[in-house]
Amino acid sequence: MSDFTHNFWSIFIGAVTLISIIACLVLLWVSGKVKVKNATADNSTGHVWDEDLREMNNPLPRWWVGLFILTIVFALVYLFLYPGLGKHAGSLGWTQKGEYEAEMAKGAQQVAPLYAKFSGMSVPDAAKEPQAITVGEKLFLNNCAQCHGSDARGSKGFPNLTDSDWLWGGTPDAIKTTITQGRTGAMPPMAAALGGADDVKNVAQYVLSLSGSPHDSLRAQLGKAKFGVCAACHGQDGKGNPLLGAPNLTDDVWLHGWGENAIMAMINNGKTNQMPAQGAGHGGKLTAEQIHLLTAYVWSRGGGQGQ
Ligand code: HEC
Ligand code: HEC
Image (cartoon, rainbow, N blue to C red; front, side, top):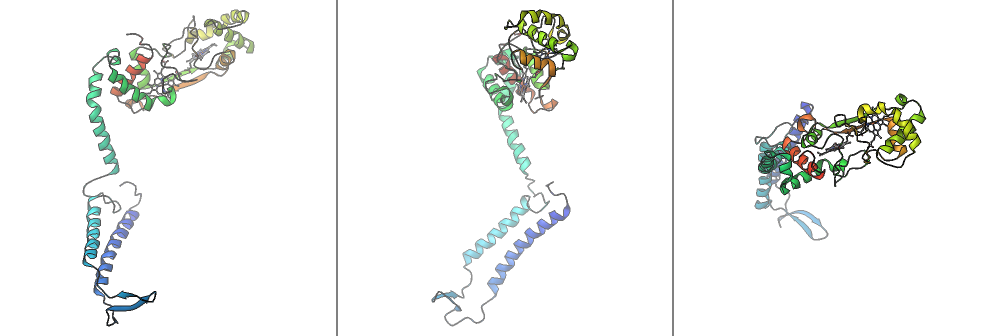
């Protein structure tokens, strides 16, 4: 019981509890001993209520006294076995935390053979097993859906995991690394590097042209000349770089919104976007086996790249 920051409270609570129990015993004993002195001939105490309701001078019924003593014995045995008297841990060593951990361990033991069966398989092989996908989906709903959506299709800022477009690569290894260690995609504000507001607009038009979106071709031509500073991350052809998490700008898949305004906002403000690490050794709480099944699930939903 580490809840007590000071010994005083532990002793205080223990003392109050024990004294109360002893007081109950004393009360029982005293009430059994003390006879009403001036009992009347009809064995009543002389107290009368509601005209004819008289209090008799009878001893406590034996069965009642027996029960009373039993509850006291129970309380003492209980307090000996379980925590209850301040810091006294109880001779059974029971704790809430221990109980929780035992239950979790039991649960883990039940699913261990299941995880073991799949962890020996490659991700593509595991992805063929309906049971592996079912477990993977459950894990996904519990750990990932709040950001990526229950259908894994994501939303603005949270990538869709069911298309074959990957920021960080869609091979089993890349996905596993993403889930285990997390990823941080960072694009710095680029307006100053481009020149003025007009240059930002021109480059935005050029980016639109890359995916065949409607665009102003004159501005796009001017923007193309400035795209060199973007190419360091997005590649000369704008197809992105999975080592940096720089998106492919030619595929008409938009993580941060489509259109001139959205692109200009990216260029002007930049963006830092984080996928939190999920692996137990990296600040997350998922085991390698769980991540293996999650990888199989995500990989199969995302088109199965690099099989
Ligand atoms: C707190 C929100 C959050 C949670 C929870 C989360 N993710 Fe992510 N995830 C993101 C963000 C944001 C990105 C994009 C990172 C970036 O822009 O580089 C991402 C990226 C990814 C990617 C890379 C996608 C690509 O295109 O390369 C994968 C795979 C992924 N997440 C899987 C998962 C799985 C599996 C889980 C659950 C175990 C999970 N995520 C939980 C926010 C989250
Ligand atoms: C230092 C590397 C870097 C440079 C330089 C860079 N970007 Fe980016 N860019 C990124 C990263 C990383 C992301 C993804 C951010 C995220 O994870 O959400 C991104 C995202 C974007 C997006 C959003 C794509 C989408 O799917 O919504 C656009 C548009 C974009 N960049 C355009 C540009 C343009 C135009 C330039 C040049 C002016 C540029 N970037 C320069 C790294 C860079």
